[in-house]
Image (cartoon, rainbow, N blue to C red; front, side, top):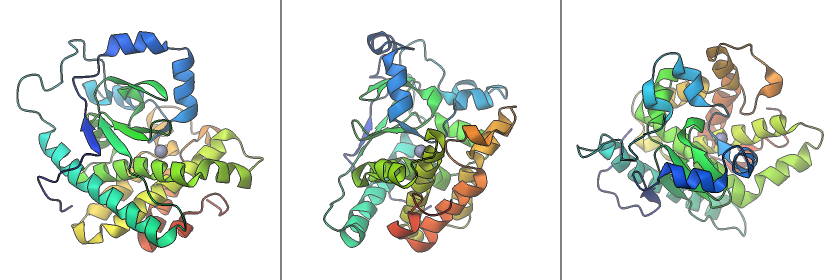
Length: 288
Ligand SMILES: [Zn+2]
């Protein structure tokens, strides 16, 4: 995709190397309330421990293995993520500018408020509890931050979602969860589907975040290059629950789905992309 170097964006904060693992983890209590809070309150891209899904293929620290030194992964050498972070700053500005416009045009009475993207490594303290990289990128409604360890992208690559537009789709999906927080989507979905399980409602929520990522992609049409849309669709496909379960070596168990099948994730991303309309992303009442 096309992007511009040197974009200033205060909504992207790089805290790599500043997030010591040990102290924070013991404060929250691993396995205690911290983990419970995380399970309940954060929205993740995949809903599985992505490091487990690909660990058999030797991706090393792609899923965010502990960094024992506590030092930034780039040490004292050049930062391998410098270019990527430049791109993220530019694209995330566009993602959130897009939502400001969409809210102005399509949401009566509610302005968009910007989220912050925190780039961390290994683990980080959030208002949803202490989180490690193993769970993949996520959004915490408590602090309205999206979080990513950029080494996740190596995992996404292995899962079948390579390319820069795929990487940006991931961020747009997390901001989709932020849009849901502003609009109260979780309550809407619950009201509309009182008899469904938490997992079933989670699928509706995740598919809506994919649709919202598509709304951004629609607004980014003039930035797309050949193959970009396919990259995003491939990424959506690669992290479908059925694909991940198959990949993890287990049987496919629809009752445990939390994010939707590959087919569903592609369908809803495409729907957002083709319409650019919030109303087209109504996963609360429409068949998914
Ligand atoms: Zn999600």
